[in-house]
Length: 190
Image (cartoon, rainbow, N blue to C red; front, side):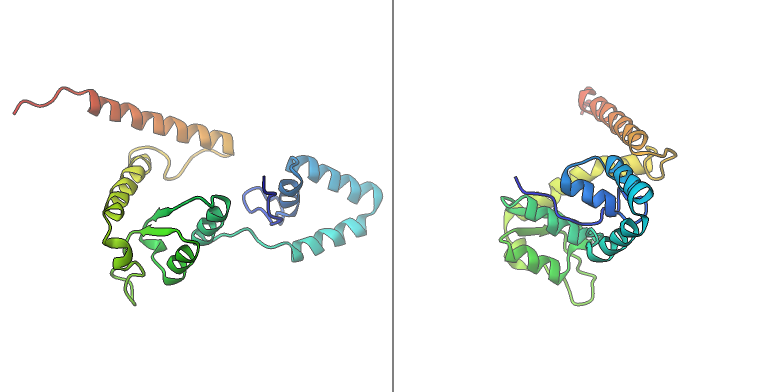
């Protein structure tokens, strides 16, 4: 089992993400590590704790924020992946070249309107699997589009991960009910 990378975590950060990154590195709860750090800073040695935090803030790399960089990082964690499907925002020459260098076939939607043309060429588009992948990708994105246009997940009114997760689950359950209604409906007479 591979150990997590030592990076600053933007999702769980309070100030700079140092404690959240260290907690992920050591497999601890970030709140516990923050409390230990606070006790160290208040009770033992304030200046050393402060300087150590600043040094880690400078030395620790940021988590990949770019979606393409996050996709590359996920491929490192899942080395058996053979294809990667994505929308046209991922149709860049460097991203497609990075996929091909790791022997992953980029099933990325072509962005033919981009200056310089699409990075996806006939090596990928000539295969039947590319067309199937594009149809499946659209089918996977359909519930999220419904949740944003009909459901309330475009802009949530809740704060906190649990409440937002609950709203997302309820929205997807509503989508499933509508999908079931369509699937179980009697066929229209011809």
